[in-house]
Figure 1 (cartoon, rainbow, N blue to C red):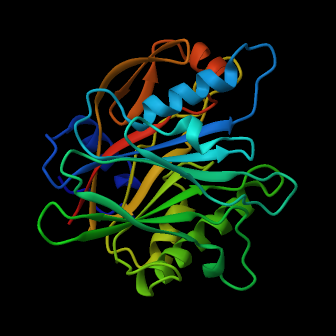
Figure 2 (cartoon, rainbow, N blue to C red):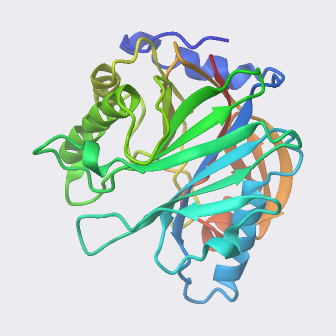
Figure 3 (cartoon, rainbow, N blue to C red):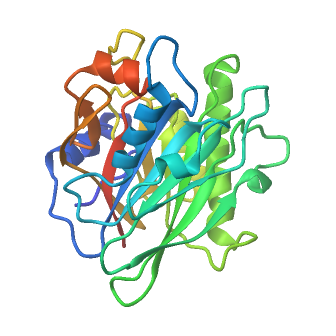
Length: 312
């Protein structure tokens, strides 16, 4: 399934619906990618006993989703300095946190969890802090952490970058956020055209994933695609994923954004597992709890997103 270019406003929601309704069986060269804003992972929550330990247990099960037979890479936002890599490492997998990021007193990390399949065909080749790739004079509050992934199942390594991103929020307002998102496109362009320090290679394929604090149909996403040199911009999902304190869905903030000429991203469906005081399944690419208030109280003010990825 190809997702068509999204440059015309009247076309913006068509590929999202198509992705949600078409969940093809995974091919041998596919892997599962999950993204989740974890709401101050590592910090406690007043009045909730065992909050840190229980949320760590959720992250471990998130990183190896029951019923998923594919290799899995999970990207986390809002990983705090108190978080412990060992405490969130999924069974048989690995966890890695970035350096602290931020240009104010508020600092957070990015995190990734990695679980391979029995054949060991997937590999993380390197991580790159994209701060050196920010244009002079531009501001990116938390420059993405880039992860270069290699899929060797076809006999030839297919490489793809994932950029884990948490957009600025608050005082900068929408204007600052749009400028930052557009700059992410320049970062992608530099990352995909030159090998960054500490990495063995690069790739023209890139997926930006995370908490954008903005609807994916916003013009800033289109500007990102232009700056990055995407031939066919695509994004999914674009549905409400953030939760207010009462557990009500409020905003469409969490998305995969990519060039469909290089990568195919298809929304996943996964069976339920007990988590966060409720049960959570993946429906049309969105982690869907039976009780949103329980999920908000025990885990996060965002639900995660999940997709099957194929490098073309």
